[in-house]
Amino acid sequence: MKADVERMGEVLRSRNLKVTKMRRLIFEEILASSEAHLDAGEIHARLRRKGKSVSVATIYRALRLFVRIGLVSQVDFGESHSHYEREIAKAGHGHLICLACGRVLEFADERMDGVIGSIGKANAFALDKFSLQIFGYCRDCKKT
Image (cartoon, rainbow, N blue to C red; front, side, top):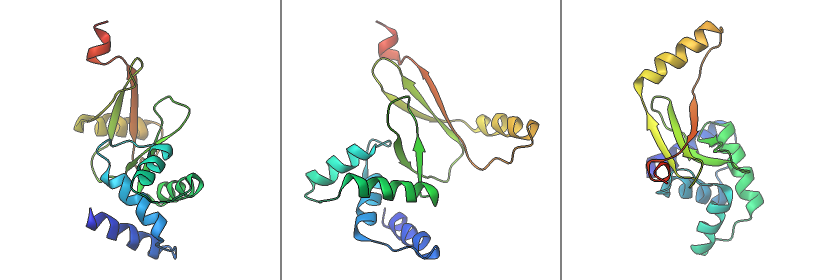
């Protein structure tokens, strides 16, 4: 985690942006999350439980900045708000989202890179990264 926080600082400084205490707290919370996909409200609540006073507006500003500079990915799970996850250097990945209980399962499959790459190539589109959201029903909800 320390290396990731140092990388955040390097990325910010390389763009002449400040490494503020609030940005560091928000980024550390994303890194520390055992649930990989926090939303701004969850980040706010977690920081408050730790006695940290950070406004929701500050959290949203930091998240937008982190997304813009490639430290965090913004993902949509079909809700009225976005979720955020640490940008990771791994093959493209996807999310299986249960329409009944809201459970999110993350997956990666090396075959996806080839398939998505072929789609990009066929459309003369230079791919950078991708994230795939698949909606359906998890094993537990499918039983009912």
